[in-house]
Length: 319
Image (cartoon, rainbow, N blue to C red):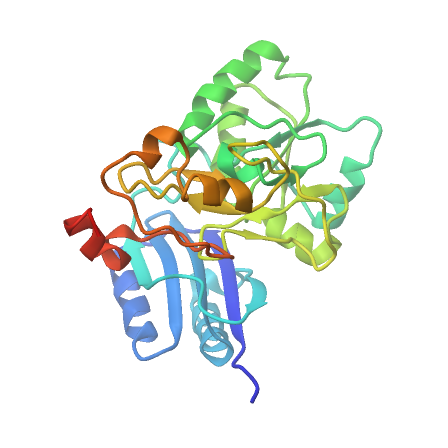
C-alpha cells in the first residue's frame, strides 16, 4: 500500500496587511479538518510561514493564498516528506516578522541574487565577504564554504555583530554576500547593514532552501538546520560531508538533541556513544539534575515538547 505524500512549505512575503488578526482567523478556518500542521506568523508587515500537510491540502492552500491579491506572486519552496513535521496547527499574530528590534527601510535591502548568480559569485576570484546570518547552532551543522559565521545565539544579536563588523572592515569599500535559511532574515538584516554604511550588499534569493532546490550542494558543507521535527536535512539528494562536531568528544556528527535535563533543554550536537554515556544530557552537571526525561536512543531525534509529552515526568521527577 502506497503511503500518502506530504509537502513541507517554506515561504514569506513582506506586504502591508491592514488587519492581520483577520488573516489569522481565515487561516484557522481554512486549516479546519485539513491534514495540515504549521508555524505561521502574520503581522502588519506581511507573513512568514512554515507548514506541512497532505499534498492535496497543501496544494489547495497555495491556490487559496495565490487568489489573494497581496500574495498572488508569493513563491513557495516545496519539499516532499512522509509525514507532518510540526506538532500542531499554529497561526499567530506577531509584531515583528523578524526580531531585530530596529526599524529599517525594507525598500533598501540588498540586491537579490538567483541561486545561479549566487553560485557564480561564490566561484569568482574576487568574492565578497560571505556572511551566514543565522544563529550559531544553525551554521554549526552546515554552511557555505568560507562563510563568516557570527557568534549569535538569537536573531536580535545581529545588530551588535553589525556594529562590530563596520569597525573591522570599511563598509563603503567592502561588498557583502549574506544568506539565511529561507531568505526572510536577509531582508531586514541587509537593510540594517545599509543603515550602517555598507553600500554593496547581495542576498541569496529564497535562501539556502532555494539554492539546494535549484543548484544542489555545490560550495555547501554539511546539512541544513530547520525549525521543525526534522531538525537537520540535506539541501539536495547528493551527500555532503558532515561538518558538525559532537558537543562532548568533538567527533564529526550531524544529529541534534535536546538535553534530557528539563530545566536545561539545551540543543546540542551529539554522537551515539556520547549520547548513551551521558544519558542524553549536555553535561555531567545536567546528568545529576533532579528532573530528567527518560533516556531514549531516538534516531532521528525530534525536539522535545515538555508540556505535552513529559507532563507526567515533570510532576513526578522520580519516574
